[in-house]
Image (cartoon, rainbow, N blue to C red):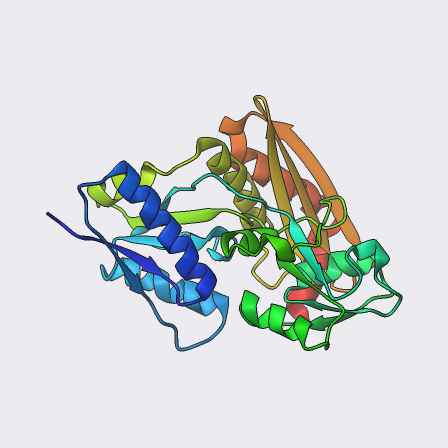
Length: 296
């Protein structure tokens, strides 16, 4: 019987996510043998690590690749495709504080660690008095930096803490009205090669249709904007009964300018809704904001 190789990045979070996927696959397919293969990247960035995993899938070194969906490029790679999104966990951002436990309680000038322009722009729009500083590394690196006393708080995707069983470190889930998350945040994505019907059937058994619809809308929005990883753009889709509501945002890096809008429709129209919302924001000035970021 064919052994199915599941590809993972090397980080603690990626390994935890991949083990979770393998455990679920074994529940569905107890007679199938699964093996995890860790794909290393020469560069430490999440973008580079994701690309290395994607290329390993295309080269047939792995059969199913597992990603944090917010790091998976919205542009398709020839020969592979996203086939499944397991049930999404918490998409919101989490504040982890040293003494103050809420964003509103941080003192003026508090030092907050962030690792994206998207987070920085929205935080500055809400609390321009904060001292925002870049904070790179994996989740454990960011928590260690907080423990050293260099920061008063750090912002981390809540799903990362949940998957690492660090729920107790979440001091506040930040309201999306204050900070929209990255497209796909809190969701996993499973990619396979086109034509690999067995791997596709296995991966699809973990697909959660409502979650797939939500992230499809969010990713279509980002793709239609032409916003890359380093642009201050965000999106969050929610489902209520049979209505999908998509909220999208584009901001200047300093948070002084922000364009935010929403659209709703049927889940089956997820891709079209994302594209339409992007066109609305582009017409309202998002093109100029994004152009200024790229030029900078």
